Structure formats: structure tokens, C-alpha cells
Length: 503
Image (tube, rainbow, N blue to C red; front, side, top):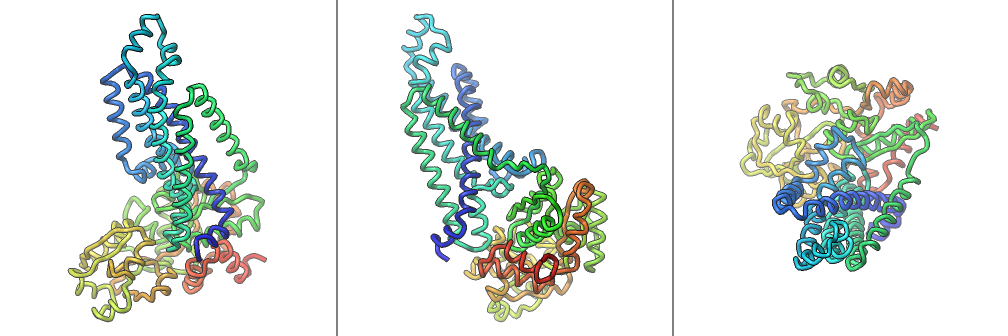
């Protein structure tokens, strides 16, 4: 599918993503301007203070944006707030630097003359300091705006939307058209912002202030149509990938079919830790989690020698997560989406590989492509080392990039999910887990106890998926989304109708 046809097909999604990106970027820029320019003016006459503040704000820029977002979620939840705070932190330095530099470049003789005429600090600013420093000051604003727009693509990872949602979805689906649409739109937006700000560089401060006020008013007005007048709303999020998106669409359809309530879904949300922190903070209400993930990752007290029986694992997960964080874990679906180790058919044949323990034969020559999460899990690479005594040379990468790396022979071994459609697409060989490292992974709705208390019907409604959806059915649905290009909502609705769970 080419870029143009993909754009036409997703035009409404693109329009919303562009609006969200504009809102996040403009809000961050305005806040950074309001903080940095007055502060820069206030400290402009204090040499040591200027140096220290430029050093401190410069250090803030070296902090990885993902690290900031991860730190903010437990306190701020998900959505626009953590994204804007992170962007403001990045934008303050260039604006502050532009303000201080612009003021320091003014001829000292003007300062002496103004003082001789008895001008106050405000009169100096108004008469000559701001007008003369404006070109350099505005160049700092231009730099900040470009940086904000580029970095704002990461806002999609915390449910704030924006053009980054196209990039993340494109990476996950191996769809270069989606990536190009998101990246190109972001680049064009940055160029437009830069050009508009450049037009203001030589204008009078009064004109710039009026423009800023218009921007603030327009920004506020843009949020009005997006406000939901109904207080009854449930937010359901899902991890990256087709499968979680299909499942959360099923939850949405089932809930709206039986309850007078609006359901907002946030697909392709990101890492397990992001989702769980968002659930605890109340930023989202429900997300589908896997039994094995709870027992191996989310519980603070690790469970030793846990059974691999699906029912036993579910009961332990349900009991322990309730005790630990007051979370309710409803009944799981039937399919198992456990971890598996995959290689190409040709690599398996040439090295005589049929089970994981046989990786010992190639541990010194094989390169493994593992996600960061799998590489650090007890039921992941840590388990391969301890249980199988297999120490592979590991390259960590985003989950969606592993398959292409395997096909290109950049890596030889990857971890996969057992219901992933790409196993079929790339004709991969799954190695037998002969020592039973990987626990059962069944998906079930996870929510706060307060949420179920508020909406008790959720248990019976979402319980309709209990023991439903076989692994074969889930694989086929993933294939329809990943390969055939169908929407997750369409595939979810097809299944629910076929299973007679909705009319």
C-alpha cells in the first residue's frame, strides 16, 4: 500500500493526530516562553547566576525523554500533562539562552545613556532592550519550537496522541507508509512553525505579545470540541501490537453494547510498566494483562517455582495483585500468548535446532535480538541463562524491529509471542520450551477494585470473553490486522458477531 492511499484511508486519524500534535507543541512552547523569557530578563544582570542557570537547564536537555516520561507517569498519570512537562523542560534552555544572549549583546553605552536619563528598569526594557535583543531571543524560540515538535512524537507512548502514533503504529506493523506520514508531517510542521516565528523576529515586542495572546486564545479554543460532556467514561488502554488493540476494541464494543457509557480506547500505549503505572494513578481504568506478566513482572514479591498450569497461575495472579495493589483481575480468555524462541527454518536446519536447550550448540556464534523487557525478565533471557545455561550475544531492540533483523540475518534468534502473525508471514521455526521456562500467558481485564465497585456490570460483561478465543483464532485475527491491513475494531466486531456475543 503506497503512502498516498494510506493517507487517504487514514485521513481522519491524521487530522486528529495533527491537531493533538499542534496542541501539545504549542502549549509546551507557550509555557516555556512564559517561564524562560521573564526569568532570563530577571537574571540578565547577574553573571554567576546566568552561568549556573544555563548549566542547569542545559543538563536537563541531556536527560533522555523516555526516562523523563517514565519518571513522571507515577505522579502525573498519562496523557498530555507528562508529555507537556517533559517538552517544557527541553524547551527552556534555548529560550533562556536566547534571552540572556540577546540582552548581553546590547551596547553598554546605551545602558550608560539610559541610566544618565534616569530611566527605570521597565523603561529600559520597553524602549531599547527588548527591541534590540528580539532577533536573538526569537532565534532561541525557533530552536525550541523545532525541538518540541520533533520530540512531541514520543507523546504517543503515554497516551497523549499526536503524529507519533502514526510512527509507532508503522514500526509495529512494519508499514513504511505510516512511518513516512508521521515523520513527514512532523517535519513539515516544524518547518512551518520555524518560518512563522522567523517572520516575527524583526517585529516590535508589542506585535509579538499580541501574537502570543492570539496563540493562547486559539489553543484554548481548540480544546473545547474535544471535551466530553458526559462524566460517564471508561478509558481502556492496550500495549503495542495488533493483539492488545483487538482485545481492547472487544472490551469497548461489549461495554457500549450493554451500558450507557462512553468508552475511550488508547491503543499502542507502550511498555507494561507505563500501563500499570497509568492504571494505578487512575489515568486509565482497564487494560488487558497477561497472567504470566503479573506473576513474573508486576508482583513485588517474586514467586519461586510457580506451576505452569494455566488455572493455577491465573489464581495466583488474581490473588496476589489484589493483595498488593487492590487490583481486580477478571477471568482470562482461552488463548495462550506465551513467549517463544524463534529462528528461521534455514538456521534451524543448518544447526540442528528443534528445542531451546539445543541453543547451547550455537551460543558463541549466534546473535540474539531481544526486546529490553524480555532481556531483563526472569521468564526471558535471565531464565535462558539460569535454567538453560545458554548465554547468547544479545542485541536489544524494539519488538517490532526483531523480525526484520532476523530476516536480514542481522540476528539469528529472537523472542516472539506464540500468537504473532509474523511467525506465519516469515515462516519461522519455534523452538520447543523443553524445560518449561515460559509460564502461561492468558489475557484478562485488569482494573482497580474501585472501578469494579463503580461499574459492577463490568465483571459480567467482560466475563463473556472468559474461556473464549482460541490461540488459532487469535493468530488469525492478528494476521488480518498485521498483514491484510484490516482495522482492529473491524476484526474485533467480526469475532464478537461470529461468537454470538453481540447482535
